Image (cartoon, one colour):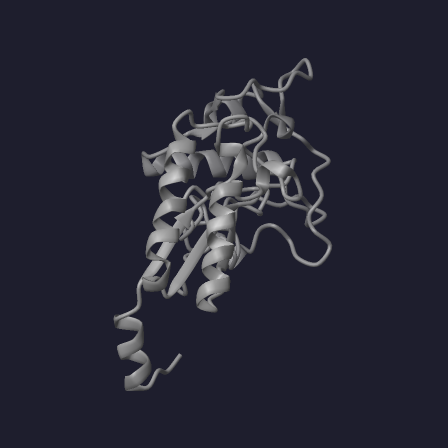
Length: 226
C-alpha cells in the first residue's frame, strides 16, 4: 500500500484508541467474568466521552467463537464420554494416550478448510500422518501437533474455557455503557469503529488480536493491517 506524504503525516499524528474484547461474557454476569471488569468499562466509557473529540480512530477487537471450539468442553470427551470441566489443562501426552479425545465428527466449513497447509507449515514441518488416506484431516493427529506446538513455545498449554463470546449470543456483545459511549463518539465526530474479529477458527486459540497461538489460515496469521 502506497501513501502520499500528506497521508503519512496524518497517520503519524492520529490518535487511535484500541479496545480489546470489552464484551459482556468477560463482565460480571458473563460466563467468563472478571470481577473488576465493570470498573474498567466505566473508566473506558468516561474516557471516550471526555476525550472523544481528540480521538481520530477507534479499533475494537471482538473475541468471536463457535460452540465447537478446540478450547471449549464440547470439543473433547474422555473414554467414558464425559466432557472436561472448565479450566482443565490438556497436554500433548493426554491426547496421545487417549485421556482426552477430540470429537471425530467435526465438520469443516464448506467454503474453506480450517487448516491451510502453507500457513501451518510456516510454524514447522507438517506431520506425515496429518491427513487420512481419503484426504480428510486426522483430528487426533492434528490435536497432538497443536498441543505439541503450544507446549514447545513455553507459553501455554491447552486450557479448556467455559463457553464464552459465542457468535450471536448476548455475551458476545460489547458491554452496554462502552457501546453507548462509542456510538456517541461516532455521532459527534463522524468516525466509525473498525471491528476486528478473532477466534473464529475452531482449531486454534487467539489470545492476541494480532495473531493466533498457532496460525492456521490467513485470518489467524499475523495481522499486518492492525
